[in-house]
Length: 275
Image (cartoon, rainbow, N blue to C red; front, side, top):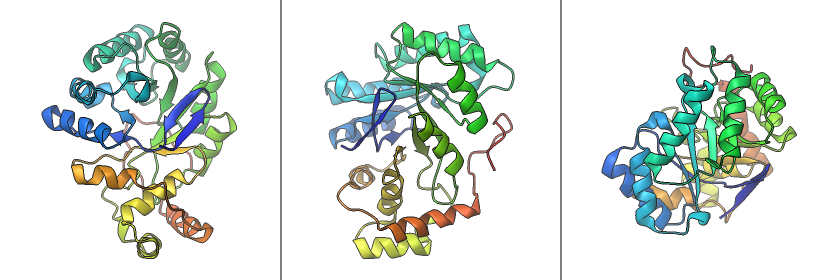
């Protein structure tokens, strides 16, 4: 499994996103993912599936130190007391003593960032998590968070796919040794798989369009991806992207699709994005 070293964290470059997965179906898919080789599982308090994710992890039965588990604190819980409570409740639901990465899910427009980052550092100090980071932070907020944090931030999880250029955020992450973790990496609902550069590369390499897109992600320095699927047959396919490489021309052609600036997750509580 290809991994990214980022400020002390050792992050598997492909993980399982679990947003929308619930109950027994979620637990079954998490177990199946681990059984077929996944070592990176992503969840969040807001997903309301941490208990099911924890059941899947427990049933898989692999040594805890082989698995990288991420969870996140929702933007309404970023005061010092609420963040601590959210982290502890996530651990209870997951059935774990600590997670590998605890993220602020979205920045808050009302709670001072200083308070949230200090509480996040406190969670690491007290062993609730091995590493800390953020999610959905544009470059200005990312710089501010890094200037406040006593511990290095390991990752910024953001929406990233071929139709959404993220050069500024990726550059900012690289400057400080952070990973950038792509959610919605296949561009949910944007039909990226039919775009000519993707389809042509799939034909040339004898791969699925989804594999081409995931290869495009992990072939970029410091980028991991957490595709979500509800189908077991997709698990192995999504993981099988490390034994071929796209050419520089193929990478550039797929990246050029980013001029569309198609953002899937854009909410009123979100930050001001980079242009």
